[in-house]
Image 1 (cartoon, each protein chain N blue to C red):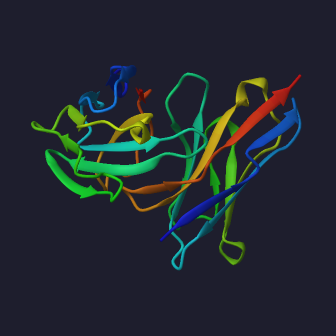
Image 2: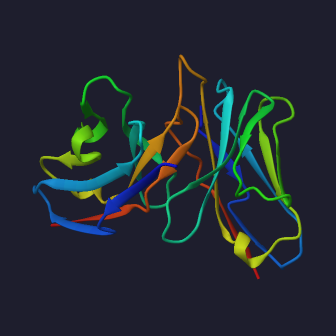
Length: 116
Length: 111
């Protein structure tokens, strides 16, 4: 078990381009979470999955954002037509669902997105 | 809506001194409460959690936090700081899937 991994670690893109990030959770974890962190702020909840089902989406997740977890394992987060305001660290985490689990114990290292 | 306030964006202590990081939450119903730590160049790691059992919660690395409903507080303490405790600490409140984080407190430990 190597923990939660995210790819890429850094992404620089031009405004208007599409980007996709990948998260690989801890293998036995059935829950996967996406958060976003901007400079000087704590992480903000974006969405979470239990197995392949996306159970909640934050209002922060505009129509330009889409997340998938097609086989209940890895997840992707796509941002279409990026804007400078999308620049942030995108964090992924995983956990078991209750009653055996709950909130994540570990987050991945994050993908830092810079939109020029 | 829940909100979490961490008093002090930067706390500096001497090695061996008491560490006290403050966290207040705003909620009509006491939520679950958590402290996470982020060491340099690493992801967030859960330090401890309060889920309505004992009000004094012990976590990893000698940290503990006390839930005080009357003060809507969940302050993090450690009796004696080590150099290795230097990190950013985040308080969070929420349910078992959705967390609201504070802005974080950067802890510096001086030799």
